Every structure is written in C-alpha cells, then in structure tokens.
Length: 343
Ligand code: DAH
Image (cartoon, rainbow, N blue to C red; front, side):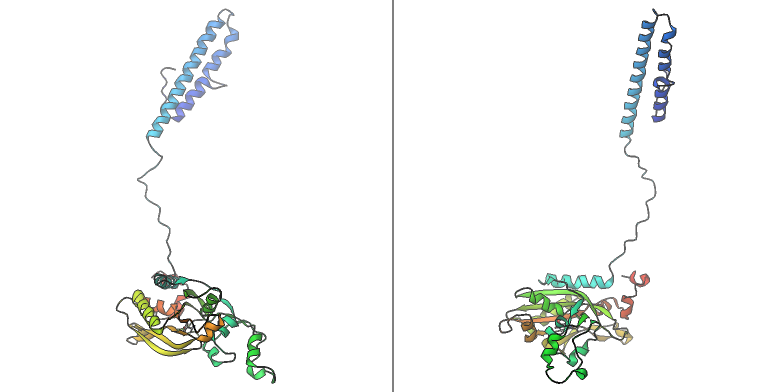
C-alpha cells in the first residue's frame, strides 16, 4: 500500500475500492478473517488491521486534498485556443423606425416632449375638431379608410327638413384609421393646460392609389407648440433649424403658402433633393405647417384670445427617402432583407 501512487481521480477511486471498499476491500477481507484465528491472537490482529485501515484512510484523504488543490491551481476548465463561435447576426432598426426616432430626438433637444396616440380615431378628432366642416371638400384631401360608418348621411341622401350640418356632425359616429397624426393636437390639448410643446411620431393610413411616392400607410411626426406670443417666425426658425440638424448645414429649404383647414396661415416646407427621380434634382415636400386655427384651439378648450400656436406634420417616409436616396416608397414596406441590409 505504501508503494501505491495516486495521481488522478480515477486512481483515487481505485485505491479506495481496493483497500477500503465495503465488499471487496483488502482491509475488510482481513477483518473477515478474525473469526478463523485463535482467540488469543485476535486482539493483536484486530489492532494491526485497524492501524492499517487508518493508514489507508489517511493516505486516501491526503491524496484527495492534494488533487483538489492541484485542480484549483490549474484554473477553470477552459481552452483558450479554441476558435470562437460565429457571432449572432445583430440586425438593425428599420430605416423608418430610425428616422422616426432621430426626428423625435432632435425636437426633444429643442425642448419638445414626445406623445403617442391611437391609430383608430373617431371622426371628431380626425376631422371635426380640426376644423374640417362636415361634407366639406377638404375631407377629400385625405382618402379615408372607414372602420365604421353610420349616422352620417351623404348630402344627396339627406332628407330635407331639420337636417342641419350641425346636427349631422353631432350624429356622426364614424370610426376611421387616422389619416394623419394631427388628431393628437386635440388629444394633447384636451387633457392638459397650455403651454404645449410636443411631438407625436406615429403611423397613419390613406386609401390612395399606390405609386413610387404614395403608399396606403406611412409615418408622420406631428409637432405642436402653443403658448402666449407664438408666431410664424418661431415656426420657420424651428423648422429650418431642424432641417440643418437632420440633413446638415448645406441643406436647401423653402416655404410655400398652402392650405389646411386646421391652420391659418398654412405653408409647406420643401427640401432640395439632388437624386430626385433621376431628373437632375427636384424640390421634395416634407411637411405641412402653419399657425393653429382659432377654431382648433376652441375645439380643445384653449382660449384663442390668449394663446397662439404653430403646428406641423412631417412625412417620415419622404425624409427617409431623401436621406438614403430611396426612389420608391414601396420598398420601405416590402421587408426584403436584401434592401434592408443596406442600412
Ligand atoms: N395633417 C396634415 C397631413 O397629413 C399635415 C399637416 C399640415 C400637419 C399642417 C400640421 C399642419 O400640423 O399644421 O397632410
């Protein structure tokens, strides 16, 4: 036994079984022979075998302790020369999502907060409160997906008599997919007191003919700033600063007069697009804007004698196309990874 060497876990176990094992261990075998001895020989023999057992146990414990120490000293079971695993493909934000976040972020730095609202809207928030009169042609500016249409009688079908426009509009329970983010102007003003300074990123829907520049859904960022003494100058200054922050100092912008029922005066802002539709460049409209119409402030219980405000609605798809020279809006919705991987 003295001569045995124990160099690893296997040898440790072999030693234990050979000497101290319950069934076939050598020490146990010696104890088993005690009954065969003369009675007077038994105590001395028993004592010797006991000493042997203790020696074996001591040797076993010492070896176990030594092996454990060696193992700890060797560090973790790790082969640093193995090749690494291939990394998981990281993926990235969709270019629309990225623009949406960046645009909101720029306005946040200007001091705007960010709000989001429902994509399913009632007629009041999407149209009525925004100063679209019932049956007014301005509603046709935005081809609407109706989810529920009742209580609303088209002009031709309306019975004559007490069917005044006011009455028709109050009965009007249409539910629509929002055609723009402007209803959030009303929702924000309804739930709080002025001043308001907020941007609203979100998805909107239009029942339009599809083309390289229109799709049936798209993204907008709405902006609203209402306080005492807000002017058209503030509006132009803020939007110009936005354009430089987003597109770079060299960006060319222009404002054109326009019409929206919910702003007066109204304007549109264009950006010069070098890659414009292979035509050697063109002006591209990226947003509508204007001074919030007093009727809109009234709809949301804000006093138009005391407060003025500006608003804008930016087309995020347009901005994304300008930035990445994408020439067909539809590619932004096809989820073709060969297209998306480029961003
Ligand atoms: N809601 C308009 C649209 O979708 C865009 C717009 C124009 C938003 C003028 C505004 C605004 O806030 O002031 O066509």
